[in-house]
Figure (cartoon, rainbow, N blue to C red):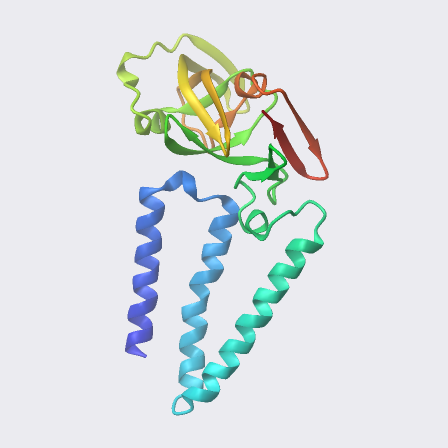
Length: 220
């Protein structure tokens, strides 16, 4: 029991450390997945106690459940029309290459999130066709190496939280899968953002894009 508790504490600590170091690599759906994965050692501890002294039988039951769960996940992933790979099912913001285009599945909240790289560093965006520019906040700007003390917040934007000031910048490049768009007009928001916005300043540089059957497709 002691080793099970130590294992659980270690997994929680490791998860917290990874989230702190790579905050934008974790999507809402991935957080949900991590939550359920953390339940495994907890349930495993109970199983261990129940089958104490009968390790062989316990491992057999565990193997059966693991196989069933994997089969169900794979089967459901391929059953969905808008699901091309199981990776996309687990993490919808992961770009999926399809015939030279990039496909992104809608998340559980109906929005489209994209795991991109900005100037070589990971940033998770929410696609917003209503935003004329790509928008990040100061925290993301600092991680990208932007000196926020030199920014001029002379733009006004109307948001759900009222009028917010922004500072115009140009991002050297934004990469989504195999697509790289350079010199993207953007803005650093004066207030914090739950998720940076990938706006028309990026999308308008693509050949085209479309939304169909809960899948956003980007054509380079």
